Length: 464
Figure (cartoon, rainbow, N blue to C red):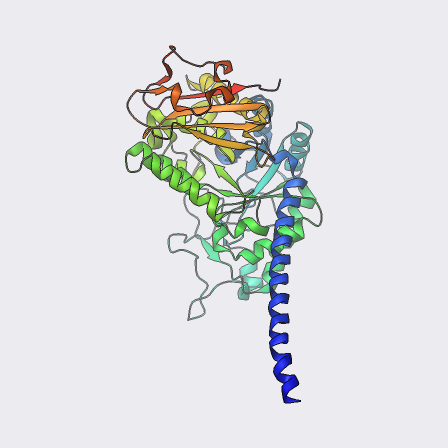
């Protein structure tokens, strides 16, 4: 009997080891299949452009009715996903400024009367869908206002200090109270509230505020539950690789944004951009999507306008966000030459009639059109390739993105000096048939001469 036991124990160990390996492999396959199915369920993501709406500042009234007057213009601009900052009533207790923060939610299942009525928003979403837009809502899962009814009805749903006092998530966020995600009932309520907005308003997804401050397993559960009904788009305000397995379709490209800002200011160099790109490719799932931007509501209000952050390099970096791999973002007003930091807690409307507004509109319209037309720039296309050019240059980021016969050549001078680029530096020049590219500036010797912070985007075999 002892001899049999000695024989069985190693076999049992091997069996357990094999079983664990099989389970791990199956989990990896399940994770991958969930990502693949999520991408397949949202084919409209492939060439989309996101447009962020700060409704309070969008017009003098800040109303849904006045915003709806801009839909034809937004359709002409070429944006696809309309992201509304939170639309729920804003807390009054401990409010900052005269109007408070969008992100201090008083009631998850209500519409802020400052913007209009819930019925008006429903009608707007219906109209947006008929025009081909998708509509997503900013979702604040991490905290509530101090006068949210949940505080009195469910105080155990909140994080408390050692004395039992409910606390803010961050000291500076004194207008909000931190939710406790160890409480399962609170989690169920939060998912139910998200479902309510999808059911009531037919939303297409959520941009999830400070997603890194909420447990990943909650977001995974939320996405799974929401997708049992309508398939929704989930965008994380975070930059966390594990989010991209089962919780979110896309996340913020904060590191990219900070890198290009530092390159303009001289604190970083082109090599730092390649370090970021290599790191992203290594750390994230193959079909993870980064949202690339030169501005958003946080950047604009707290860190500066695009002119403050990028100066004369603004157009070059904006073009890069539209042509590199990822999902580009336009913050409202940028297409009208927004040149001020919009106030966060008070009224501060966008000026839509600035002298350069028409030129800026055409600039962004051109970029959205290039993105829509060229499969080489789309997200997660089978067989798509990206080839970096002029690798010896310390100032120029140049690449060709290709899908089938469609190719896009992008050249960006990330320096303050004029640069000339030799066509001979491109390997297999004939392969790309560069002479057929549109708008090539060549004198027969140099393929390109770009001034300080200059750029060029050229297409080949662009579909009509």
